[in-house]
Length: 225
Image (cartoon, rainbow, N blue to C red):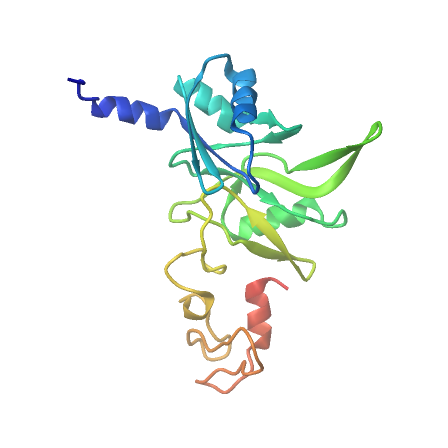
């Protein structure tokens, strides 16, 4: 008869687990090799794929922290994981034009009350003997209490760009709560009568039903144009 595995064992495994997110299917053997090149041979104990997210358990919590903090080099790119339950994430913004400054991205994080834990880094691709920017920028951040996800998209210079991180979910992009959409957000009010809501995202009916005043200006403040 097999002996019962203790709760302490499962707790230790959870503390030694790091998560990676990839847009495309990857070679698990290559991922294992990349991790063990960083923290040592024979350190990966489990690899669990879950719809684009890969949970990797390693043999010691220190290895887990190294992977999350320093990242690994996988397929010629540095990628970062996050520990289970961590409020520290690596947020990536895709296809950002060169004329958008890093300060603009950091200002957006500041509006979300998300703390950047370092400088924004840029991704490159090789062209001959040169390294050329590909428009991807990423930064390690710490979420404040009550915030578990950032919006899937945000605006810079009047255009919408994709933002991604592990365990991302749909949230109201004004208050970052997951239990309502922007039109039902208690923080979204008519700037004239201070009543909640009064907006339709599509169509021309952007009039507050309470004060009959156009709130086009307020709507654009919300989405960051």
